[in-house]
Length: 322
Image 1 (cartoon, one colour):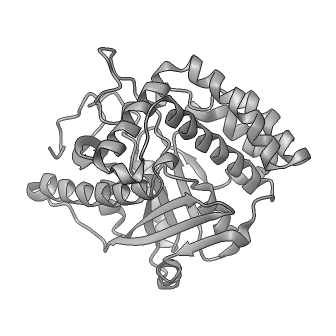
Image 2 (cartoon, rainbow, N blue to C red):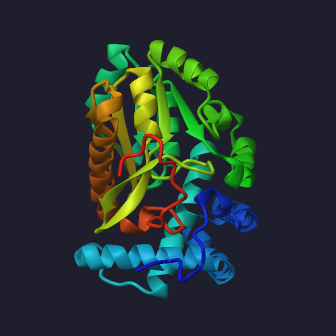
């Protein structure tokens, strides 16, 4: 079950996953004028064009959905191109939700927060922390919620080069949407010091746990995910050990009329002694992969990694758990 078909795997950052941005601009206007159902009717021609033009994303979706079906048939009874179209449609709905969030049009009263007490306790402790997010659902919900909880101050580490057009559109809708984004291609000592200072002030750093780093030799470890070994970045856990702060997980899921945002406590502050580092990283990533798998199976069409997730990138053999 592979999306490669003999073609070398591409890093996710080389894939422009919002290449239909012009169509989304038009559809956002349609939503504002006519509502969500007319938006959906016009969304499908955009999606069909995108599917026809982007073979790699189409094949990656087929591969992922086939894995879900094989691993847990009840979570996704059908696969094939129709399921891929539904997968892309969920992605389009997610992009619209991001625009609605920053445009002040999303029904925030229909957002259910699970683990809110965990979040409140973390804020009240004043210790700050590292939050590991995923490409499941809509992370923008967390950033918007931070507007409503003054104690929840976030710095989101991103590689926005591949989605520059979409981020520019968000900035036009709401300039404040960009204020807590920190562009990071690689972790430098200066960046680590900056993040350490923010955590010391009781703030939270958010980093993705389900995409390998943007580098020639990404540092990863493999863990079982949907029945097969997949590479996951070790960076979030190395960063957590440097910051000496608690680790939390964030997941979101779109519902019929709103969304569910889930906070989970993952680890107390960790250390990674050199002799035990590989084993500790392997255990951390296995536990993270298990939680990601659990949430993906709740809403399999809402995980938006349109590249061959199971393909092994060029690995950095230095301090890598196998």
